[in-house]
Length: 192
Image 1: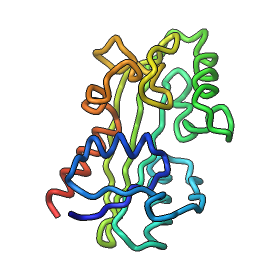
Image 2: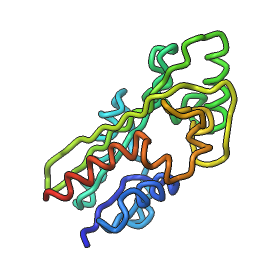
Image 3: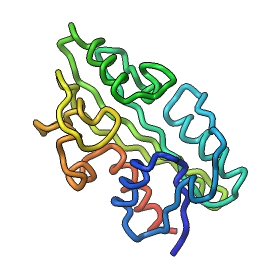
Image 4: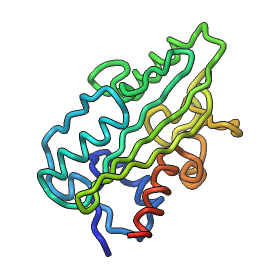
């Protein structure tokens, strides 16, 4: 089975991707290769950050790898938090603080439409490939549910009345932005 490095230390993301990929590849994370160096995310775009992380690690370890960057884009806030999704309320990366700030910034907004966007940058045999997934929906008035991570308790996907945090992992993995990008990654891996 082919080994593929997922460039993240976020165990929630690794678990989610492993559930989607199944046994198609031997998926490992940064902790599995003892990577402890901070990886920059300074390009100002979701796609650019995904590539920057993939290039940084590939140049050092030389193994097939992929990175993803995800942003929550809220249309009434001109696409914010966007590329700053993880640090929207500050560099301390608090999911609760991020959600609290977003809900506060939407208090007087009627349009609560939003989308999650994931871009995967795959470095495979010295070539770069991109895969993008989008989940459209809206921001709830209050937090709902305890499953998931990040902004899941306040994001309600289109055609659902439940937040990502109220869906089962299986339900979320059928419709999420990350699942859509990973499905494209899997389709690509089947062809090589």
